[in-house]
Image (cartoon, rainbow, N blue to C red; front, top):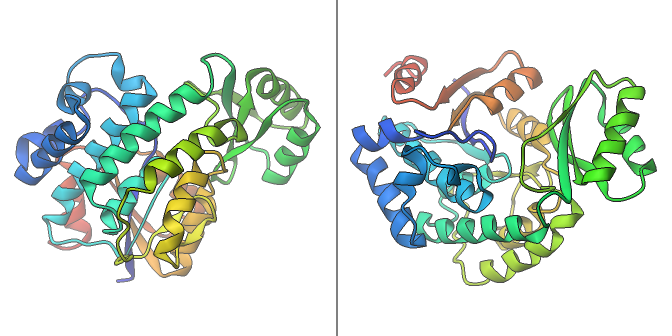
Amino acid sequence: MGKTAFMFPGQGAQYVGMGKEFYDNNEKSRAVFETASKAVGLDIESICFEENTDINITEYTQIAMLTAEVAMMQSVLDLGITPDVTGGLSLGEYSALVASKVMDFEECAKVVRKRGLYMQDEVPAGEGGMAAIIALDADQIENVCSKVEGIVGIANYNCPGQIAISGEKAAVEKACELLKEAGAKRCIPLNVSGPFHSPMLAGAGEKLARELENVTIHDIQIPYVTNVTGDFVKDQNEVKNLLAAQVSSSVKWIQCVEAMLRYGVDTFIEIGPGKTLSSFVKKINKKVTIVNVDKYADLDKVKEVFDL
């Protein structure tokens, strides 16, 4: 068997009830929720488990997702499975850092709570937007975006045939018109509260950099890939700068997956709500084994793959 990667989804996959079965069935998973609530002074259990509108508001979504993902991971680790490499999409990179033991969960929770606030407050509601572009290659998208007046550019390299753009609302709308003319099958406006991973978020990255000054970064015990470069982080001293930059730079997820494949990964375990990353990986490489852990019963699939 080759190497195993743990991968963690980003904002947008959240839903009410995420992590509840793990909370109910595993003491260590429950402790993750309790630690997070205490660390950030919010009732994370009620945000994740009870009907509410907060779960889709960035300042709450990010801390809720981090908590649910790390709680789910505890149940996977309890099976005796450890990752050889970790990665996450945007916010998911923080769960990857916890998995790689680069950051303690409690400190990570405090940073992610602030990250959500900074990202939400950076651009007034309605001024920015994002859209997913279907079936057009990156070069064509870059070319079109460069001709549009205003701020718009590639935010996410998700998988072949799906790239997200981000920027000023009017510029994103204009880019969508031109991209359809250039042959894009569809341009789907994304239901997000801001122009994430665009230069419009640079200020949030600066505030985050100041927040990260007080965080302890440990040796990288388990290799992890970063969205900013789409490659492994070689030096722990780069971690803080990369996290600050990540807020306003493109998410190179395709490149992250390719780096993991070159490293010898043949089994990907997506830990967290939804199956978004699993579907992206399938489009990048059809031969690898992919398991997603979102419900407690999904642990049976993991046991099957690892003959446990």
